[in-house]
Image (cartoon, rainbow, N blue to C red; front, side, top):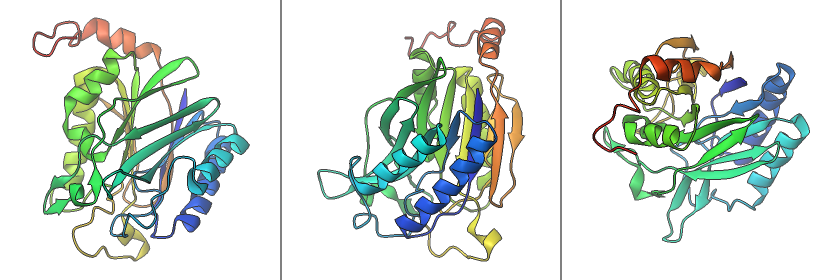
Length: 266
């Protein structure tokens, strides 16, 4: 399975971001990707008032993403915001294309490092997986990477990989933490982890204001043995990776951490 990670910088205008998604999806499809994963907040970057831009899953923005996926004949995974019942929004990953239609609402909200995502975002509660080309893939978003139980739940549900979309907050040591956490979650659950983040806006001359997590780049693909296979830098870029699905069974035979669990057993 070929995965494309589209490490871009989105702005505050959903329509302009749709054009970016269309352009990068076409590039990924031309490179033979089965799945193209866009960052968290692809609809509108953090720091944007979210309630005014949020739309339901049958609204025009998500419908346009479905059209992009259909035209390119790939599965597109992209971060958007949908209305929540209490006036906040849900931080949602839309997965669509090739018969796939699913939405994951971020479970673990980023109430850390001086930022309170829960002020404007309602937490989800449902684990979501999708099936692509005979392989099951879990969906996760940003701060979820600090919680190994979600990645193990993907493995328990039959997933061989987790697609992780993020808009990682900048700060001292944060890029190092990102890489460490992605590698750890792959090894915890013996799954591939394909992790895409927003590129660092500063690489395009835009200096972040305030504490909103606007991205640091460094998207990466990690094997089920915890080894890094591919990584981008801080600037925008398209990462293509071929995931050997059979490697998961091989690693689980050698490192049977799922089978050996005693706490939180399946």
